[in-house]
Each structure stands twice: as structure tokens, then as C-alpha cells.
Length: 115
Image (tube, rainbow, N blue to C red):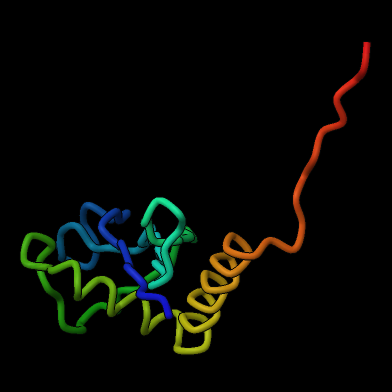
């Protein structure tokens, strides 16, 4: 079982748009999946995925001033814009990455040249 931490704190804004200031149009997201399982040093296994999500402000719709926005609100906007299927896909991908770290299906070896 994993928990997922969504970091959506970095955003691109239009300084001025449709009479509003600092209108978010792009969110840089980072999602970290953290497993309940731990390695031999008692550290949880984890994996991270990053990306961006465009947001569209519609003139005349409700607007919250940038300095009054919470991180949770922006995370909700990103997830809503992505849709449940994409959010699930990202989180399942992190689970797969964690499983691969725990029980690798492939490793890279180097042949040492003899003298």
C-alpha cells in the first residue's frame, strides 16, 4: 500500500488577465508515492513522477486571489482537470515503480576486464 503526496506549489501565471491579477494557467506537479514497506535501513520505498497541467481561467467565473489560494485548492484543480483516470494512472505507475525497486525484473551488470 502506498500514500501519494501531491506537490503543486509551483505555478505559471499571467500577471494580468481579464481584469484579474496573477491568473494561474499552468501547474508544475510532482507526485511521490511512499510505500508502507521499508528497505533494510528502515526507509520506505518511494518513487516520484513529475509533469505539468494546464488550467484555463474563464472570464466571469469565480476567481480567488493568488495570495488567498491554498495548496490543497490547487491540488484539487489539477486532479479535476486531469480526471480520475489520469490521476489513477499516475498513482498506479508509482506503485509499479516501487514494486520494481523492491523486486527488480532487470539489473545492469558490468564485465570487468581481466589483465
